Figure 1 (cartoon, rainbow over the protein chains, first blue to last red):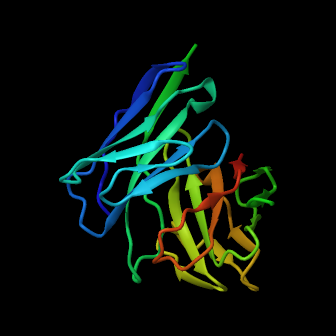
Figure 2: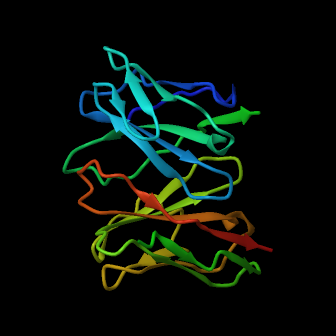
Figure 3: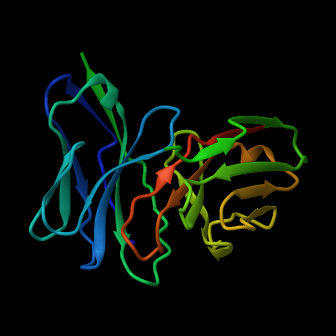
Length: 113
Length: 116
């Protein structure tokens, strides 16, 4: 699975959009970009995933660049409850893949009042 | 419906003791994963089950660690002769389909293991 690079930490004002970047310059054509987050003392929680098109769900939007070398997770109106560690993961899809997730250090997002 | 549950939530043991950690996945989920998370680090993959069989145990650190899933549902992670370095949060996750799919993994709250 491709290695991803994320900033160690970010701050965001409550009510504003939080934009979390991720670099995955070695991603292959069969690798999806997944985002999970982990709120303190809880297990990770799935947010969103995409291959090459932008994706949106009730939690967030995922913008993937045309060359697929980077992506941005957008939380449109951050709340204090969005304070968490956010993990960007490149995950290969295929019959030989076990589906295991390779977590990096993630980005610690602090939403401030 | 019920999510992934793990018991106990906390376990304190002494160096050299044996421990068992239990995971109850979401009903019907065929894939089950164990991860370990040390303080300040992201979760680290340990083992993956598809049904009853361990399809990938490449993340188990050594032969003191073993996991079973005899009926394809509940799984138990077993650690023999515990060491202080085994102290971590052990996370379990389940997924509804084969590993090659793109389904999300649902994580439990974890078991915090402390080895004194």
